[in-house]
Amino acid sequence: MSQIFRHSTNTFTRVIIFGAVFILGFAAWAIDRLSRSDYATRATQSREQPVPFSHAHHVGGLGVDCRYCHTTVETSAFANIPPTKTCMNCHSQIWSTSPTLEPVRASFRSNQSIRWTRVNDLPDFVYFNHGIHVNKGVGCETCHGRVDKMPLTYQMNSLQMEWCLTCHRNPEKFVRPREFITTMGYQPAGDQEEIGRKLMSEYKIQDARTLTSCSTCHR
Image (cartoon, rainbow, N blue to C red; front, side, top):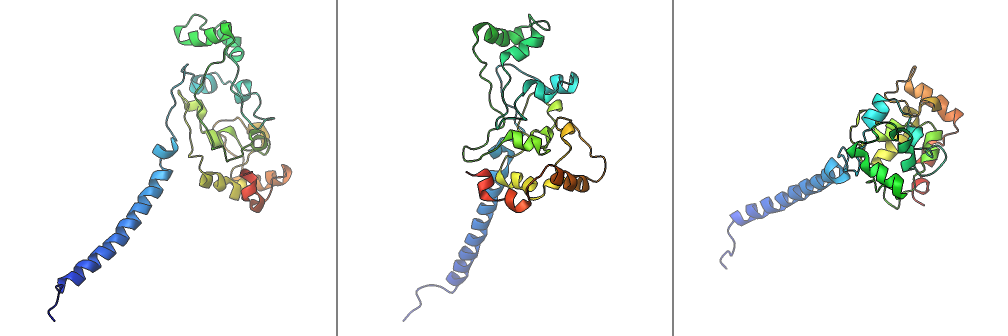
């Protein structure tokens, strides 16, 4: 019986099989990199807002403490957006006729909230409590970055689970004394991990096993 396929067909088949493995491997790698990229997570991308509020000016330039506007970060699960009245405490006297701030004045006159665009937004299946993190010594800049250098606010980190676990597995590398929670550019007065371990005991921070339990963040 004559041979149906040439001998070269075997080589061609092997090339296709091995090529498919490499192609699938590359596709998996590319998808993984894309899912972690700033494009997918929207990290480092400024959000357009109805009023171009500058943290760089207010925090970095004027030294306004985070808690002056975000009054509930120490006591609530959610960080509040300041009411228009907070803005008008200053802007009824400063830049009171600026066209840029007309949406703020209009909001104050009408008692209608400004529709700000949310910058840091976790999925609904994630439970996050601002108050717990602040009171356990997690600084604002640890999650939000150097907002004192942001003319327009953007999401600093990916907010993906692997990023959260980096801290939950080794909290001693990140926690700081509570009096420095809102300090931008904080530098520890000594070895961070040694200080962190002492603060973990003082602030009664749970061990890594508890902090990385699924039920801690997914309820």
